[in-house]
Length: 432
Image (cartoon, rainbow, N blue to C red; front, side, top):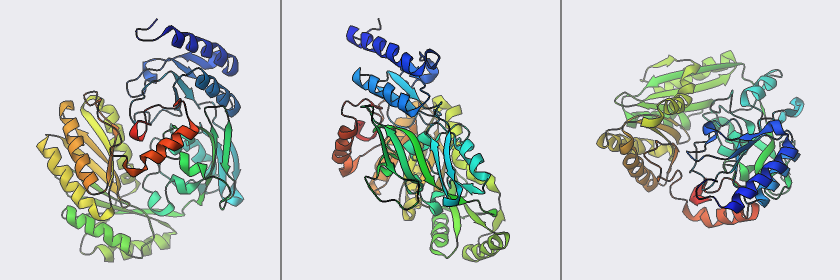
């Protein structure tokens, strides 16, 4: 018996394992290994049900046995959020990977939670349609995972976040209920808005088993134009000038590499003639700053920062920043001065919405003061700084920061959906 684990807990896990094996099949339940750990917390078992009904039955079993359940899709974002207080069972959606319905004439699609974004994109492309987002690691990221983490990327500037794109979900609740909300049409306002509620909730309210999205046509042409700003203030001025213009751009970002000039990237999606006209107008807006056709690779900057943090795991950190677009320069100046004082190197990419990603590299012992001080500065701007990855030297650093006045309401919602705190306990804002 493991130290610190009661005999009742061991018996509870054993009984759950026997019953879950009967539901999912013996070959779809296994002992967890080191690679299954969630922010350095090891679970005991991994279960992969084949249907949403079986998943709900397994979840009900775990809830009844008092076990902590960690929902998992492709596992690309398990580092996001706080370490769980407990982790007994990883409940995988890997086998729930079908595209249920593509109503291409209605511009909607329904897919199971374990369907990868790349698989979904390939199917939609056959009808020249797309789910208008640029999620991280699309070959491994799943429908349920991107919804749970609200990962939508630079295209949200034009098409909105996932809360704007999702129109229906099916959710397995801890008591075994399969709750459905929304529908298969773009305009559907009946009932409780469960899709928006569970988007970004990190799997703390239920396990998403299916989702329905609104779609958009594939663009006929795409063109990316970039320019270098003299300094951070000019970079922000140019970004705001583009936003305040009549340009119909799909994405806009500003990239910062330590001690280098900021670079702005603008994406146009239209016909060839439309892209040409938009490019000409952009050059007038940016004049006298020089522009270049830079290509689609610049839109991988956010993923490159995440990949670098994963590769340089022990000596890096990754933060998600949110500020007003008018405060990007102020946030950058705070970042630059704090990083320099703590001997930390950094790269950053910030979207025109004010949402961005910052990669830090340096000694692990210097990360906590850097992140703590920067969070205080950002929160003073009424922004937020979430930590998506941190070295082992920063285990006590909260991933979310100040929860604000919404925390009592969030606690009540959690209590209504998951009264035993079975799902991802402690992972979300305020220890939910």
